[in-house]
Length: 166
Image 1 (cartoon, one colour):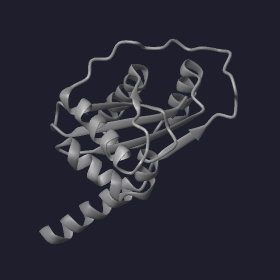
Image 2 (cartoon, helix red, strand yellow):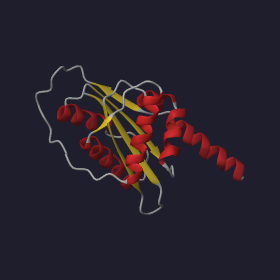
Image 3 (cartoon, helix red, strand yellow):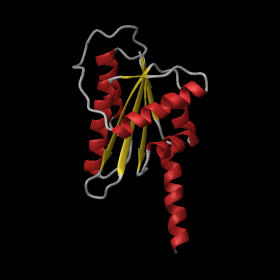
Image 4 (cartoon, one colour):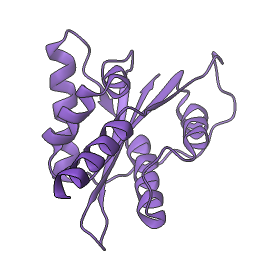
């Protein structure tokens, strides 16, 4: 019984990890600007995760990404939404990406999410094993943001990582 349950959980994680989202903007310039959130307080885990992503990108010959607080704020909003609704998904990604395109003039936006990884290294390892998430990490991006929030009820962590090209 325990083996069967473990298989179901692992299969669910694999299916979940295969999902990632992206959005492109064809507009050369964006005339309407949304409010840009400039302040964000990073946790040690968030900074470590960003460093691991940049270390990986550099190791495969890509540019390091610069953090933008507005992206981390939008990621935090999504983590809070997932915790509040007890779900793990990319709901409202179009709204997030449109806000980012308008606010920052981003040309493309992608997003990785994850759930219930204990350490930054564990989530990075899982993302790199998933084709879609790895494509986002290795994508033609210039900036990123991240939020890692813990559900106060069960202690499980929610991760939202947003990538943009500006």
